[in-house]
Image (cartoon, rainbow, N blue to C red; front, side, top):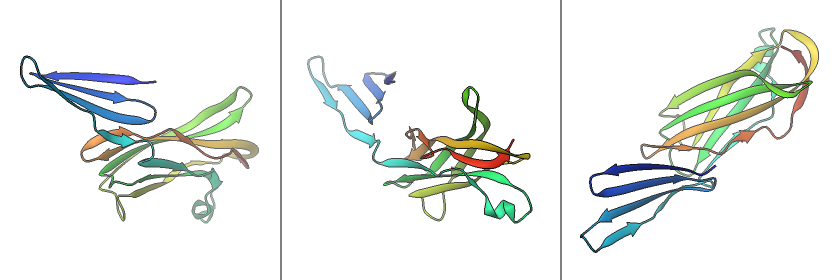
Length: 168
């Protein structure tokens, strides 16, 4: 859905348009009563960053602690350094009425290390409570801060749902 946010500051007009493909800033400055200067630089396009959502899997590190868990790994990759990333990761399972949320994780990362170009979350998981065969998928969304400005990433989901003997 295209969204427009309009903020007026004295004689300057700032319009930030959020669309599916780009975020563009249009600055209109009133120079005199007859002249108007317009500049529309493209600040961020959908190809500048991407959200990689891995398929759900049984966590081997948690399995070593004698627990079974469905784990979600999500990575935000950008061509610009990310100053901050806030991930929203949802683990869903299939039921009679389609997929439903099992748990949502909000994971903020500031000053990402080792690289600000690739930020990964690997600590989102749900513990299995039984061995009922269940189908899971992962959906995710993130906001990235580049140059001090927040930008929404594209919505992402795992490539295909996976079945596990892991009920919740």
